[in-house]
Image (cartoon, rainbow, N blue to C red; front, side, top):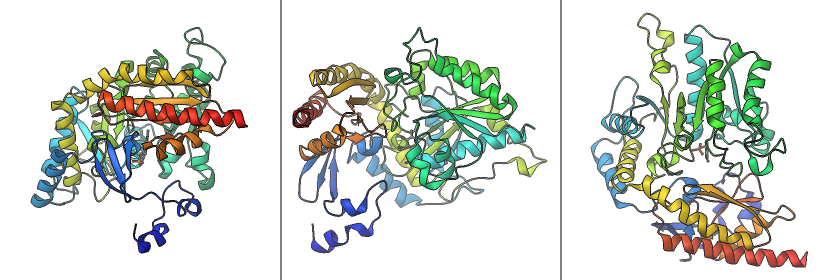
Length: 442
Ligand SMILES: Cc1ncc(COP(=O)(O)O)c(C=O)c1O
């Protein structure tokens, strides 16, 4: 690294990073290929989290890159304010097709957080247009992560994300998450009778159903610790939503499309949300892109020739950016042609078997996951996650410390081979054993 870059590394303010510490040992990534990235010194790392579950198809996919370059040469940008462009239409058609035409209306954003904010605005306006202006409240889960803009942060349930930025927006209410491993009610599924899902009904009734607009959740809570709901959780949630006219919004930003071995993560629970939000994997992170997919009934509530106020009074300059949408088109084409979603499903059992081997290490408490989204929960006696994270990084594997703090997450790229998944397990195993040795010294 040149002295000039090294001396000025903290000119770029990094998110969620203590810059005072970081500037002493920065990692400058300069290159990527497949599941690997390289730093400026030539050290190779396995990107075990698809760069924040973003680059799902791996780095340096020439097909996506060429499509992006082709689009830049044809039309780099023109706004959607009163005009259309081909890539956004092409992408909308493809998303409709992969979701089996359950959704036909799509609003594009530049990020996941913008997608969540857009969904919240859409649902509030939907009810206003429908003559139910009192329905403004949004219920979500403790430990959920929906992003960092004010709407998304207000929906999120990780206190540290909002503490310094209060007040959050009005009308956001939280309920307990379906965290079976550490059940809030100290019960076991199915004897628990889904008390966590039933909480939703209790809260809707307490708040007055006519004031509740939506319930929003991730299919699997990601940043909150890879929390996988039990089988009938979402079916019960949808039943409650339908009973009280509350819309179900599913945040698929870490799971769409394919991460859980299904197009939408929620497909695993056989539930159809009224709105879904996807980002990240939609363009494999090659360019910033997000999407809000809505059911026809919601979209139609914005159509009224005589009342211009009913239109969606919301949008970004770069909504439906042609080059970003083209990256989305290329990603979905690759995903479909290479049967990537089916492959993720097949790799689930293989990776589960690999990670289950870690259970013999005394500091490992739980292994859980779906598709290629996995958690290794460690004992919380000591900060073993930070230690394991650091050791694994030194050994060439990038993992992620979730907000549950004692949970390490793995989100390998969909293209990972069995040999590469074994390598991930081996490095993690060696790192956990080194961390475990520390326990005997405590
Ligand atoms: C489930 C979920 N929702 C929302 C977001 C926010 O997305 P973005 O960082 O693109 O704004 C993330 C990002 O990690 C996420 O995982």
